[in-house]
Image 1 (spheres, chains in turn blue, brown):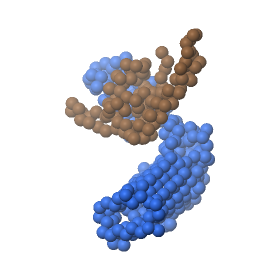
Image 2 (cartoon, one colour):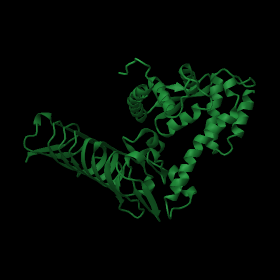
Image 3 (tube, helix red, strand yellow):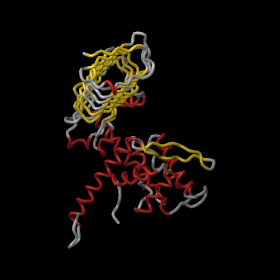
Image 4 (tube, rainbow over the protein chains, first blue to last red):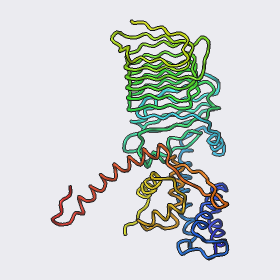
Amino acid sequence: MKREEFIEKLMQSLTSLPLKEKENVKAFYEEMLEDAGVEQGEEVPLMFQQPEEIAKSILQAEEISFESKEENKETVPGGSGKQEQRQVAQDIEKMVLDVDGISLKIYPTAEKQIYIQDAEFSSKELSTHVEGNTFYLNARFPEHKRENIDFSLWGISFGSRGLQRHRPHRLKIFLPLHLLPKLCLELQATSSSVKLEDLSLLKIAADVKASALKLEHVQTEQLQLHLQASSCKVEGSFEDCTLHADASSCKLKTRKKPEDFEVYTRLNMSSFKFFDRNYAVLAMREGTEKANLKIFANVSSVKIEEL
Amino acid sequence: MFSIQGQILDFCVLAIVAEKDVYGYELTQTLSQGIELSESTLYPVLRRLLKNDLLESYDQAYDGRNRRYYRMTSLGREVLSDYQKKWKKYVKQVEHFVKEKGEKVI
């Protein structure tokens, strides 16, 4: 079988695959053959002799995910058509919640609504439904069922197949930001690490008893953190920040420099780093090791009080 | 020879890519040094690993055309180290049953 013939037969056997994916397959095998030194017009090696078999295994892999999508659709009573779901999924901008074993409440404060309520990711089952513009999600993963969860819908992906294969140490949730103009998040975490990325929220209130908290590229007007964590790293844009921390180290970094920026902290930590702000107020508990208190960069005024 | 597929094949591919970025043909060559590999298996494996964010791809010009390279993501590294732990345990479990007479399983 000649190279062109192989590609042609392969493509013919993949007619049910979306065009873009077909092109990926084609590019992959063209590259393979090129690298194997098979020129146009030349015979393909023995291992390429069965394009139908190759197509079959590709389709099998794809069909599994296709079926899973169908199942998911059934869990969305009142949801719109599949086409629309896909559309939304394609419109994902950047919002990732990366969590493990926490309870999480997210609720919107504007007209377009999305609710994520009482999701205990580590212990119970997953269910979702959509009513009008409101998205409801409950994520409950019993240990023994984690392998069976495959969920990718409405722009929300629970690590999808990664969950099945790799048992979640961590969970990723992607949300379409255009649905979430103003969103609040209340987080209560007791886990080894909590990481939130690319959130655009009105308010984040987090009560974290974890070994590490990381908030990156976060835009929020109000940030309230109650920490019992060995480390905390926050990077983003926030106007108001209240930090009650019992942590061994804490880093706050913001890109915003509003005039009225104020941070109030109660600290009991061995080191503290603070970047780029106009002024900060740090209130330390008795016994805080001042030797390890470090304040960096554009802080125009700092007040340190002992409580 | 045992047929190597599914998760173990994912594991092998991750372990190879963890060493250095590779392109498709290079990957088949490396794999086929150690295991019997059918031409139909690699593409679905790569697609799955990409889809799960364990690998990512980029194109690099080579000899007037593009070559697609695959590299690890941080999630991929985590999963790989998890696999490595599980693999050791798995091998021990299997050895427990298949040890030959007089042989002691550590």
